[in-house]
Image 1 (cartoon, rainbow, N blue to C red):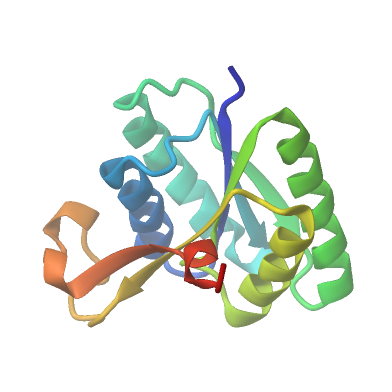
Image 2 (tube, rainbow, N blue to C red):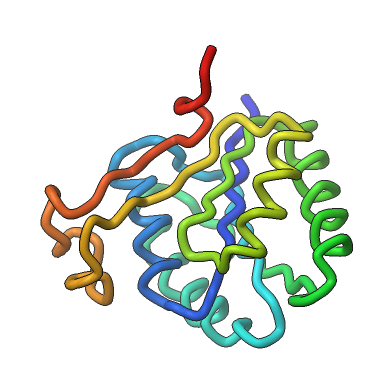
Length: 158
């Protein structure tokens, strides 16, 4: 059986990256067989640190592979789109694809959403925080009434 490839867009906030993946695991929505962190050169240190933490976290869910980090240019959105489209297309041919846009900057999230619609990824996840008060702490410590994990594909009209 094919697994789930989870593409997580990494920005400059370590906890946003870790917690958004943690929420998928905790809620049982997208336990990935392959985790790819997409970042730009300016934030690759955050992605590396998050990758190390996520590898430990994922091991508790039975995943033994190392999260992959892919660096995309920050300012050439056409090039970013084309790279994401290529990654999503390949992953889609191998199984399900979940895109996690939570920790990304708006420009990267927007371009990723376009590529996701074009490639018909299975899920587009976003963790909505009602307050940033506890945003920089581990996911289980954020009060349940302050966050909601959404699949944005479920919001569209049928």
